[in-house]
Length: 204
Image: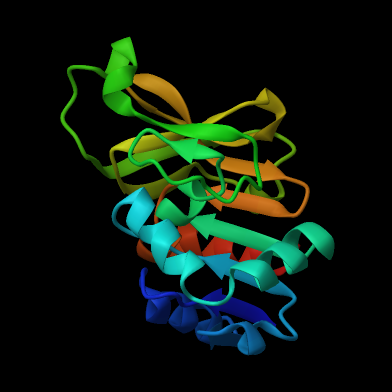
């Protein structure tokens, strides 16, 4: 059962609609009890890092998520700010992140190659997956996704980079470590490429 974590942020219904069209069972969890039985979890997110962490920490689901993902190995996909929350920390705020993938979230303007570019980075970008990335398997043409962000995930370990994109500098736009995965772009707004990626996640 695909379970979407609803802690008050993110376009929950868009993900529900995609999975219903794919005839893949999906539900929404707003509390810890509703997480029971989840085989895959989706952590969406929009807005500022600290606000998102505050909302998740206050949702009553944080301990259950740690137990399921770190303890039991349930697959999770963080999306947009949901991906940034997987990190240890963010330049955008002061609260600690989930720490499920080692790294920190940085502003594009902290990188010389991107310092003069407008923020947020908004629009369609090509994405280059690593050969071993299971989220991007099966697509013969190029991967094109919709982005809207000013911060990016800097992995502590290069092997956790699952895909890159370029905005001035090359940056990690997808991360993966064992059962923890993240994408910076919005698959729910990315037409057939987004649908293919969400289907791949369901089939992990």
